[in-house]
Amino acid sequence: MAISASQVKELRDLTGAGMMNCKNALEESNGDIEGAIKILKEKGLAAVAKRSERSTNEGRIFLRQVGNKIAAASLVCETDFVAKNEEFIGCGEKILDLVFEKGYTEVVPELSDVLMGFAAKTGENMSVSKITVVEVPADSVSGTYVHTDFKTAAITVVKGSSDDKVKEFARDCCMHLVAFTPAYLKQEEVPQSYIDEQKEIFRTQMANDPKDASKPENVKENILNGKIKKHLAEICFVDQAFVKDDKKTVTQKLDEIGKDVGAQLSFGDVQLLLLGK
Image (cartoon, rainbow, N blue to C red):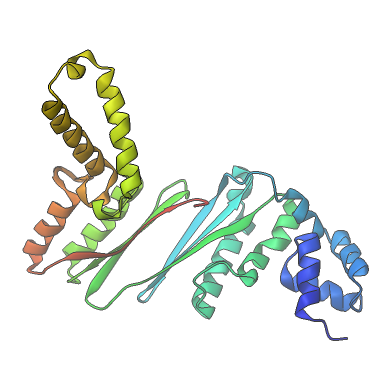
């Protein structure tokens, strides 16, 4: 008999099993929901729903570039033991295969279903937490980097030249992102609410410091502005001291490389990938 999408959704909501597993179970049970639930339980596929509230702090980031397209998949699980399992790693690679093959840019049921069989086998809560896709424009280069723990990765696109020096710089920027994990790309992206909150924190700190508390208000305001400026430079990627040349900011290094290759360089897509985020 024909199985409707609403039946599949109902069974998925009840069991937490994958879409294809639900469809197959419904077909096997001739559309009987209770029978399908029994089939899924017998195959160990319905148990996944019972694990859904267990924390998933382990996992692995998978990253691949094909042509001008870069894709990353963040897979989370409960234990480091499972994260290092060859079958788990194989699932991550299969998910990237599907991303490139079908053009997915976000987590969809077909990608999540890749994990279902392995989840049932191990008894762990696991999921595809995020899919990231970056297109590299013409006359641009990209850098990618995955840290040795596979929990942090980065993608950097630099526009304006395809020179090897620019490629090396893009790769170094990825290492910088992983090392310093900036909260923002540039200061224009920092919410005013965050800046206001940070100002209040600094004001309180200064009021509790006898050396600052006794100073004139205009001096205290200048000190406060200086503290905010320094803080923003610490949390914004382009203003941080560059990982391989701490005498220059990332922006200054970008300009320096641009002069070396005779091109006006700028950052395109910049992604810091953190497991599960």
